[in-house]
Each structure stands twice: as structure tokens, then as C-alpha cells.
Image: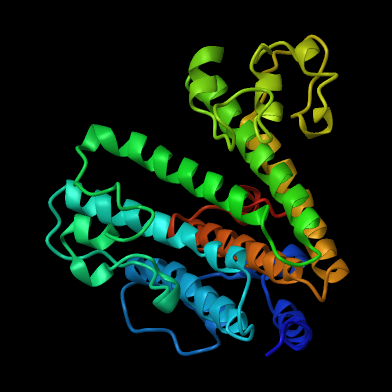
Length: 339
């Protein structure tokens, strides 16, 4: 289809699909399920596989991702020539697949692990298992050409994530329709907030120094610094003391802070802040989806909403598998009980 016809058709299809997507207040239904079998039937509307519960949990998560990839790629195929950014969003699955393959090879697994197949949109040759050099050959991940030692994998995982962010940033700045600025602004804030949360975790949980954290930030320019488009928020929190509320009370995101009471011990809580960010994100993405109905931005927002759904499905599945309470599982997923 031509751009206009495809955009109208895709928006209509996505609008119908989102009515049944488990985001916002509809996601609470996932956490109301009393068993993994009930959760399967709710999500897939099909008979429950006759497998042990422990395997069912993994199958729910895997099949949910497969379903999303099928839905997204089917929508994408309505464009005769989709924008590169729409295709490159799927690269995150190749990145996660490389991590899974690397982990399996580094511990001597003989059987190929389960990966998410992207069909024509994949840059990797998964049938070349167990030769990782052949798996990544010809892709932008061709540098990942050997099995890493266990202590190397963290650094290589970070390199994969950094490369993916930098690649997407360059790509979103080249979006070919009128939604380019909207998408650039969205991803600048999205990457900036994720970077800030990453810096908070390193600061609070690993007690890293400012300089050590700075070296581990994601960036899209030449180096991580306060001048980088996605580093500013993270750099702002580096000099702050994690147990001094006065350092944080005038912070630009002070409304996200965990509660403080005069005279009581207080520490900034990265998990609390992350959940507060998630609580407001769905409504913002839904708003952008509807406001940009005839542009690439609507499909991108659909993609993001579906990723949020996957997070909720994982949290609900793990909650049932580990016998975690409904409220705790919802909190992990960033779902408000008042949705």
C-alpha cells in the first residue's frame, strides 16, 4: 500500500487490537488470574498446553513475545517501503538473542537455546549454531565473533545495549515522515530516563563513585557527559548524597521520590522512582498514539505499548510461579492498583 492508505489501515487495526491489550487498567486482569493455566487462557484464548507448571510459566512468556512479533511484523508489511526505524526497532530482539546464545555457549550448552525469530527482519543466522562467528556474520554485530568467558559477558552485554541505543538514536533522527521531531523528543526523554535509573542503581546498590558511574552511562555522542543528549538527567544525580533528602528536594523529578518524613532515616529508592515513572508512561504513550494516527509515530507507540504489555505478562507469570502477592507483582510491573 502507499503511505497514506497503509497508515490509515494500520491505525484502524492497531486501535482494535489495543482494546484487548493488557496495558493500563486492562492489565489488572492479568494479576487477577489465580493460576498459570487461567493466565494462559486469558492471554491466548486457547486450550492450556499439557505440560508441567514450571514449563508453562516459561511458555507463556515465550509465546507472548512470539505473538507480539507476529502482530508487529504483520502491520509493518502493509507499508510497501516502511521507514528503516520501524524495522530497526526489532533489533532489540536480536540483541537479547545474542545474549541468550552467548550465555548458553559460555557454559557449554550443546543444544541451541530458544530464541525469538524475526524472519526476514532478522540480521542473524540462527541456523549456524553453535558457531557464533557465523551467527553474527554480515550483521552489525559481526564484532561479536567468539564465545566470551563468564567474566567478560557483562561488558559485552553492556556494549550490545550501548550499540543498540546509539544505532536507534541515529535512526530515529532520520525518520522520513512528519513525526520525526515527535519521535526524537520521545526517545530523547525515554533514553534519558532509563540512563538516570541506571545511574541510580549503580549509585545506590553498587556504591559506585561519580567517575565510575559516568564511564558506565549510555550515550549517543562522542562520550558520556552532561552535554550528551541522553546523559543530562543521569549526570545531575551523580553528586547527590543517597541519604540526604535536602540534596533531592529541589530535583527536577522530586515528585517521583519515595516519601520522606522529618527526623526519620531516608534513602533515595531507585525501585520506587522507576515504578512512579512507569505509572505515568502508559497514558503518555496512548496519548501520542492517538494524536499521531496517520504517521509512523502511531506504530512506534503501539510497539511501546505492546512492550509494556510483555512486562506485565512477565510480572504476572513470575508472581504466580513464585507465589508472590498480587499487589507486589503489580508493583514490579509498574501497574497502579487504581488504574
